[in-house]
Image (cartoon, rainbow, N blue to C red; front, side, top):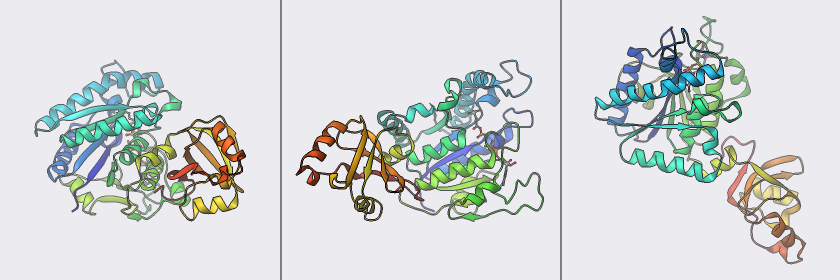
Length: 364
Ligand SMILES: Nc1ncnc2c1ncn2[C@@H]1O[C@H](COP(=O)(O)OP(=O)(O)O)[C@@H](O)[C@H]1O
Ligand SMILES: N[C@@H](CCC(=O)OP(=O)(O)O)C(=O)O
């Protein structure tokens, strides 16, 4: 088994009991498996739900809250309880967890994205286990990751993980939700996720869960596009995570090993906001999409917007949006270059390493 960096997402459903509180046995089982994975030489990053589950009783709620403010208040209390539990449980094996709470905004600028990467990799270098959760108490709906499935996919891309393991209460993707259909068939391996598979996946099967199988498949799609293999399923015992990496897990495997996508391309594709538009001709379209070349001024027909050097712009071809890239010229300077007779032979406007085509399976 190859040693690598692994992101393990522990979902609410595989962490809680019927009352919505942390289930001691399930928690201990996860800890044993995380310790075994770490001992086997892997770098382990955990994306753990459970803040709401740890907090709602302390807040005086009789059941898991359903309102946004209720969940945010419960998470504000519960997150510290959750991380304390990880500290005690991992500490018993001599391991240290580090709490990282993220909102989508933390990935919105290149600097913040890069800082998150540097912090997590420094922790891993020191043998620490980062335990990441969404910063629920300050997230607002437009800025959430949606759920911890997507957060775990984005984190796995950020840290260039070899594998993302999504632990839940069902052993993989079925043709229909197996909770309601005894004849549902498990899919053991998926090379790439199709729209038909998305239709098979439904919502959460418990009050504690968020997003269900559909959000896991969407997250898996993102992770695979970033070069990360995904497992969705369950398991029991200390060796469950090691067995999953050996290909013996009880669940669905998605995607094959592929080179990781560079951080800059990930950021452009997933988090950047476009500051303008560049319209290009057919020759430039072919050069960008088929030959993997950079965009030169010669292929530009028109530009719009007031973008600056280093901003990200949308690039359009004859049939619409082709992709996004980081420009090496501001709009004013680019206009001057385009108007000069010799300007069209000038250097690249978007370098191939800073260009991300849309509608491709992978971003690499
Ligand atoms: N096609 C499907 N195959 C498997 N599970 C499905 C499917 N459609 C919906 N589900 C539901 O997805 C649930 C897992 O998602 P969720 O409850 O959000 O878990 P978690 O809290 O671990 O994120 C399962 O319990 C199951 O009821
Ligand atoms: N951040 C929340 C969990 C939200 C969530 O996405 O849960 P799930 O994907 O069902 O594990 C918490 O810690 O309670």
